[in-house]
Length: 215
Image (tube, rainbow, N blue to C red; front, side, top):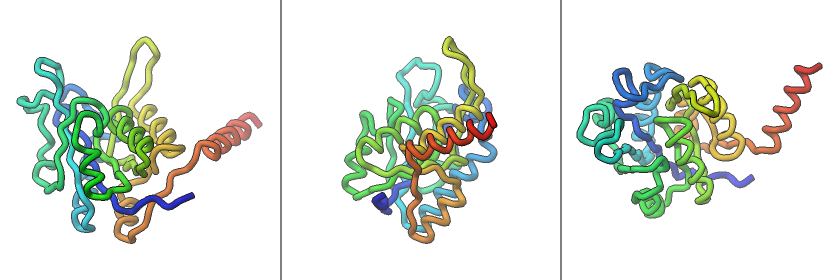
């Protein structure tokens, strides 16, 4: 397996007040009391290591119930705004790439690895990780610096923990190397990459676990 490019950018996605208590989509797992300090730790460590920091915000059309540009809940969390960043992206779709200058910025700065933090695991983080792979980029997902919330609809019901865990397993099988903030900081300080797994081995381990339980 080829080693990923180590020219990283930390992409901090949609850490906006709507995802916190009092907002329209409060993150449940991991709780924001854990994920927000990890996001800011990653930002501080990236700055110290000379890694580009990209801050992303989502703005919905006027009249939408969430992410209004002129409303408090649509604003970035104060812990994000008080930290420096190298580039600001305003998006209207889940992927950071769609309808923005993000791809051009990556190319200009010769970025090969996107380190993804922020919200939500299963929506904007996922869309960005999937598209990064399709564009030939390596992605890293800081699982404890992100988060999910519960869903229930005609297709079924899932807790925030289930959604976050399942998406993390799927990411690591093919789309993004899943890591913790502490492990990511250790890797950037050592100038090392973080490898993802692959679909075949992930499936073999899953089937082996099923066999062991049946036995």
